[in-house]
Length: 282
Image (tube, rainbow, N blue to C red; front, side, top):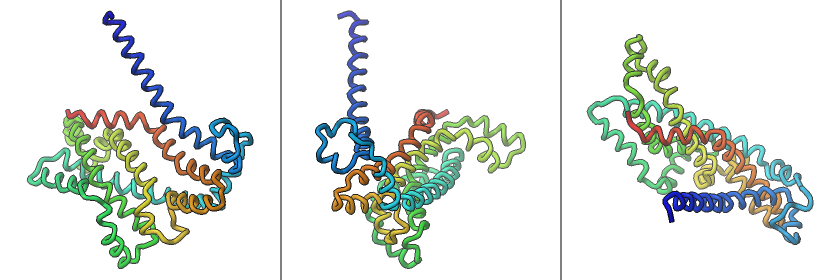
């Protein structure tokens, strides 16, 4: 077999493999979307449960949103996620900027101190954190989850952004200082905009983790009004299984899944740029 024929065969095999992988990934999602607009009875009696619904039953979403109280849970998740991301990105970018751009005694030790947090299982902190929040009267509040999510995400975020800031051109920093910018102005006006791909990259990773987090929300949120979407979905799963209303349950799964897909779809180009740029140092 000639070299060109072998190369074509290799490319064809790669394309077939990628197509098969795409089908494996997408089909369960498509089936979930279709199941979310079926009547529950059709899920059990349909001759072809893998085909299109006989009747498009959009009321499942109304049941999940109203009866399942997903409207309130959705708002809680948005508030906690957005506030946590603001704290994580704000604190981590400043810390990573200092660690990545300035060399001082203890620089590496401080970086390793942050990295040590990535090796410690957060589940081990569950009980002491619970009693801490209990004594501070922060149970069933947004602040409890925002503080915990932020603290848990700082090590990874600082690690990624430090490498990213190290790769930014030092000449731009020097030029800004010559033009009379203070150190904070250099960070805010020059370096931070240049680091936007890296910031968006860590924001995506942290968003997915916080949006779908269940364990800490389960422990620190006991008030029904303060539940997040994962807690609401678990409660809906229990209730609707007894009611055999699986259509509303699937609709709830879609409500939880769609925001994450939208965020990833809109920002995926920045994600690719951030991962590649952060791996290259100037």
